Length: 402
Image (cartoon, rainbow, N blue to C red):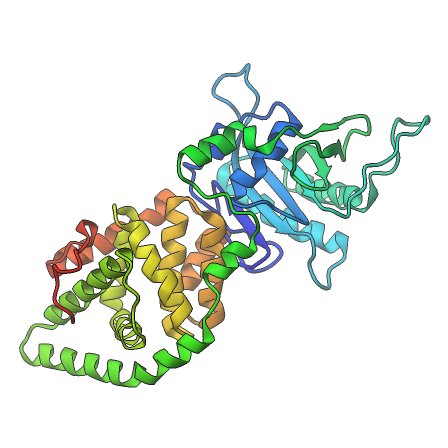
């Protein structure tokens, strides 16, 4: 998964130029029929979660249930056009490989493409063929289409625009005479649906990367307390084993994390020592696995607040644990771009992190969120076996500090 691709509404996120971030199938993109290029283009920010720049956005199509209607967008993938060290032909091959894998997972054979790039120039019309050369991005799209066709996936339309703003000009990269002007993105039905549904449409991708950026100063403060927090956790576990009740340790550690989720949700600022105690608790695999159950409960947003805070405050494998929980939760609720960025942050912090690696593969291969939800249900089962219920949340005064 990488920092340069996102996939929304079907498959996932990955690290190379060929792999996307993704969001679940309940995404509003499923309601968008393909009729007008301008309406499609202004819906792109809502579908990918932010306003893309210097990007190739690919929409994967499925047929409408009514034969008289146009196809419906089933998934959206965004690629960064500013890839280092790659020719346009190489980029086209990498993009096509990624999209063809997603189409195979979705059972799709048709796609649409939109280039968003402030460097693009609308070709001048000429007497000879109605328009001039489509330019370098037209060349990339042509190579992209050829590569897709080898996998029996067909590019049904491709357009370019300098920016997704009202009154911006768009033009076709396949039909020299097809061009127009964008409507106001704020009036897009897809955008309105997202706003009413409470889904954020961020102004730039950097707003997502900032969410998982490490706070080096805080991480250093937390590191001072990590050894003592881990030693204390070890002592507690050893004592529980001596009592013949190791599950008692897991339960109390899990309840402590739930208690801190409630604290953070109520606006409490955690101390460096408390971050260290949470890191120690998350090192217990039973506790960590149980916490995946929060992603499908009423307290998913509250839990994400803590995962974000921990991702800022921790480093190494501890940061990877928190970022993985964040990435999983974001993906399940439909924020594919954040899911991809969080999982990548986890792998950057700990390349050998097994759960982050599994999530990365799931996203890259286009696994549906319904399938990934099984992990949450397993987490709820683990918590139930321990005698805890993470789906019920925890009030700040319900559980004594660990």
